[in-house]
Length: 399
Image 1 (cartoon, rainbow, N blue to C red):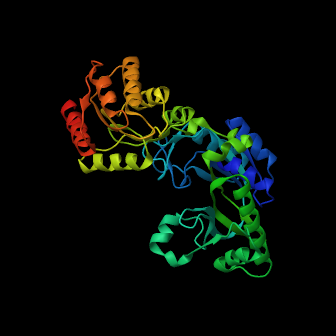
Image 2: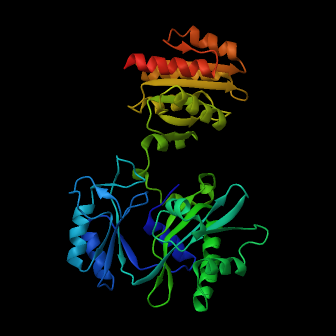
Image 3: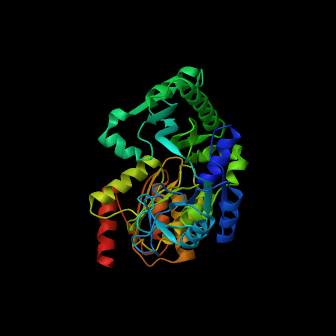
């Protein structure tokens, strides 16, 4: 689960981390009021969407030469003018894709006098099963670009969970950023607090880009991006309350209600699979035969008829889907349960596109019998390769 920048900064403040003063605004009037509450004379008007690259983004409804989603304003009147242009319009960035995201919230922040920008993030390193820090002197840039062009400017290290964060971790951050004296002490303090926030809130990612050194010699978190481990949200109702469903795909929201692992993609073949590995293999083989998957959907090993029905409805709700491939290997999940769920869903929502079903494993013959005797127009497949070829062929013939 992701949250907005202004919400992330409120979390950072809980842990004593340095952030600039700012106020969230949902209307032009609130933006003006927020600016008047800040000392000025420089303000930053920031679009609040769940995507990076906002400053370089472009609004669909504005001229091509219009400013992006993060703007400087030198007066309250300029704040008002920017708010009028930004609120309700669609911001397209490198991370949103061409569809973009509508800006429904702004963050009006006090301007900062920046001497230098750095990059600092905390994340879960799955190779070491530890919390890791990623540090670079190249703040304000896409870290992927830095990693590709100048990898020597990125320093990474992990924290042993047995000891937790220690002063030497903070000194490693200071060294990587070229800080000494009082600034090194600030870096140690910052590192400790970031780690504590990360662990206490069960985060998956905490990115500060940029971390700035102001002209008055202070380190400050100028931007903040947070992502949380969804499996741990039951421990954090205060974080769940920050969820903005307007930033999420409605199909993914519906999937979360049934504990389904669903990610919308941009292809034409909907997939319903049990098991993440099998789901990835299914996506790969669809691409191998020249089409694109419309989603990743893992119904899980213990899905019931209700979950399968919900999964089918979510797939068919995507208007880009021109065909569906059901690929089930029954272990804990029984093939007859899948068959009953597919039939129930088809009878409920109807079926006007090709459907290929491949079943294997526990109760496979019973599952095939249920589908065969259902009277549905379903294409049976013997194995994954056969299923992929059949759904690709059926989709192309239906165009």
